[in-house]
Image (tube, rainbow, N blue to C red; front, side, top):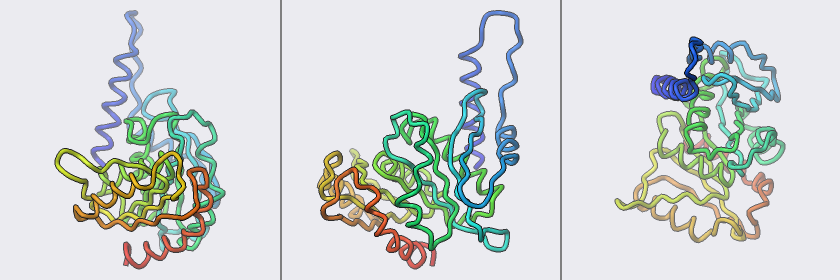
Length: 263
């Protein structure tokens, strides 16, 4: 996670410089990664659902997120971690990180994982703000909670599904697998199609009116031909706004993680 510290420090420095004034008041010392980590270590995290806010490196700018902590977690029983990225990322929805009642809960209950659901704060998941937020949360949750760091998964719906593909492509050293749903991530480039270094289990409703299933199928087929390990499930009858209906497929995902990814 050393690159994360440099990324955070650079982000903070640019903010401080851009906001400095011409008066003689000495600028405040910027917050450091150590400050953020200390603040996280002081959060009270109980078993079950915890809705939290953490000041980032930029003073006055907060990350809002939900952590679901399994009762069984301990230093002797470290649990998987699922980073769950919500849809509608460009919308400023104050409670977007609190919508875990369907799909992931209880869909993933057999894994008994930690679940971390960050709020996008109106930025796309691939924007710098959220690249930093997601990496930082993985870093701190892994450091201070009982997480099995070999079993970290990124998952998401719609914009969150595109974010899952993005993090699978650019941060395979962090995640062991990705689970995008109802997404449309362009894997093509002038050099061909993206080969993902981690396995992916993707879902898409055949009646999706925002992201055409055939376009998504084409992106995925191209990446499979490039050597990617992708399982793609087309779900008959589901449109883009039927996210909770995918919950019935989560036992298949659990089995895939346990027997294909982590075995």
